[in-house]
Amino acid sequence: SYVLTQPPSVSVAPGKTARITCGGNNIGSKSVHWYQQKPGQAPVLVIYYDSDRPSGIPERFSGSNSGNTATLTISRVEAGDEADYYCQVWDSSSDHQEVFGGGTKLTVL
Amino acid sequence: EVQLVQSGAEVKKPGESLRISCKGSGYSFTSYWISWVRQMPGKGLEWMGRIDPSDSYTNYSPSFQGHVTISADKSISTAYLQWSSLKASDTAMYYCARQGRYYGDPFDYWGQGTLVTVSS
Image 1: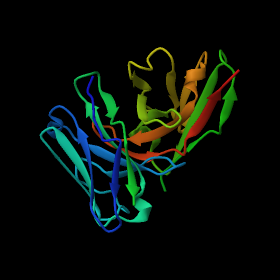
Image 2 (image 1 turned 30 degrees about the vertical axis):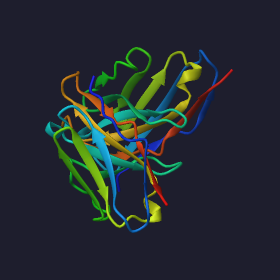
Image 3 (image 1 turned 90 degrees about the vertical axis):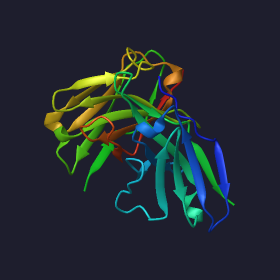
């Protein structure tokens, strides 16, 4: 089965840029979605199809995907961005499974 | 407004059965798939399986196949996740999520979650 690897934690100072990676074999050939989950809340879609933003998500959130790494970038980080972030792909090679990365805890210093 | 509203928290004993629900509103329920996602305490998201409410076609993660059953009643816009014999290891938060009808579509709306606690 397909495996997505995320760093367990990323720390960033307010106003700086946070980059959260999601590694997978040739992930650049797949569509990657990103979710934000704050404590005690359900996940929220923040980036879909590698780099599209749902309505209501700030432009500070962006995504890219190439080679073996997809990246979620959060510019001008705010305290309210502190959350867990998960990447997700559809694995076409294994009976249409959906796969999540292990999640990254973003800490705003 | 699209909403997925899940049933309330449950406390069960090992070996008991359980069915939790997810009611969709604000959209055509049969035009989107519904997936179920598990989150064990302090852990990440795990995809369990999905259903196409239009015809009740399902597919499951191998990790959950045979242990849970996903179903739907399109007449009341509700999807279900059920267990016939719970284990303590089933203690978790369970989310339903809406997904477009194409493989690879994102989970664009999520339910609020149902906490299931299994303890003797």
